Image (cartoon, rainbow, N blue to C red; front, top):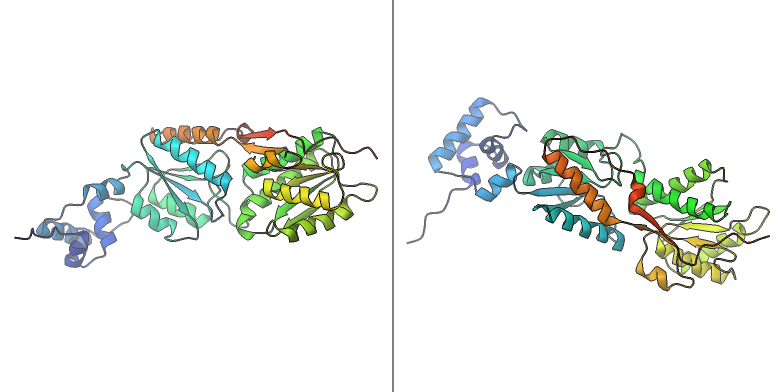
Amino acid sequence: MDRPRRPTSADVAARAGVSRSTVSYVLSGSTQHSFPQATRDRVLLAASELGYTPHAAARALRRGTSGVVLLVLADVPIGANLGSMLAEMTAAVAATGRSLVTWTGGVGPTLRETLAHLDPLVVLTMAPLVPAEADAVGNAGIPLVAMPYAGSATQAVGPVAPSRGELQVGALQLQHLAAHGHRRVAVLTVAEPRLALFAHGRVEGVRRAALDLGLDQPPVLALGDPDDAAVEAVAQALTGWVRGPAPVTALCCYNDLYAAVALAAAARCGLRVPQDLSVAGIDDDAMGRFLDPPLTTIRFDFRDTARAVVEQVAAVLEGAPPPPPGPSSQVLRVVERASVGPPPVR
């Protein structure tokens, strides 16, 4: 004889004449939504008549006891840099007996739907949330924590402001070049819209650091894919930048891949690196050490970042306010190789 089918929340919803989400909220005792008492009574009666008991795992998820930590990601390409950060974050959260789950804006279910489904212990964000996303987290009553690199957890209405970390990595590039004596620096950035979250902050960081140091504002060249067309575009720009009474003597590049484009363009122009032109990258990509010359770059210390995030999450789960993010300079390191030197004597 077949075993009788176990009643589901859909059965309760049909019997009570309500939606499955209403059944979920009423039976979990959630205060996220307010329902008329008559609606609550119908749901409770239907569940009792059907002998319905919520599944233990689902009940745990609704009550936030599943150990889920939700990380909100921007819709950006996941390269080696971001992949390394996610790996360190996953390991650090797992060491506390919890699971890291990611949600990407603009892809799949909305953040509000994801929160209703998972009911995570805490929401982490690596970039400020837009108002609608911040409202979804706030209305769900879930703690929101900004990663140390992000700065603020929420974003005011208007264009997305650069994160504190991106500002600082751009500033560190410029400061390192200035420490070698460079006074006139140019910036190579990217035109890819999905990378604007990072690119804008890095360029702005260079600009602000130049202003603080009393240097000229840098010319900026936005590039498409890192291909031969990009090499030619940089070569043409260099032809103009290195001439005149105030020639450019160094480049701040969006990342190591675009720094490699810069090295190829310099060679095409007959410029020696670093004797005629210094080049600095970002990411400490493994290929950078094999370029000619080996690339000076900025490295992110993701292990320190992950450790700081776990400390923030622990504070929140213990009922304390999250500690303020530490200085993001603690997770940035200059890796000195051979592509940066003093400016040429003219």
